[in-house]
Amino acid sequence: MKKIYFALGLSLIIAFIIFNKATAVTNAKDFKSTSQKYYTSVQIENGDTLWSISKKYKPDGISTKEYVEDLKSMNSLASDNIDSGKYLTIYYYKD
Image (cartoon, rainbow, N blue to C red; front, top):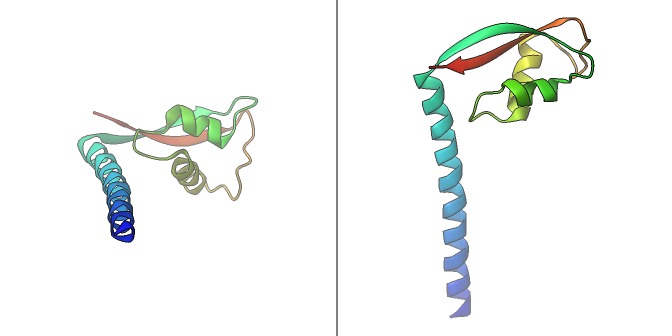
């Protein structure tokens, strides 16, 4: 009987986790579909990193890691290294 309750409890926990992840993905897609995507350039300042820039500019519903990868791809960067004084193209969403 304990095994049945354990299995039932474990199943409920797994279902809850899956539902929460699905909801988060849906919310991110809804945000993207109701907003316009814009691009701009920001000047890299001394001490800036892709991670610090990403935390500052990333839209809700997108992880910092995903935004860093997007910035690297958009700016043809092979690594996370960036130089102060240069410009970085970023994107953001606005209603």
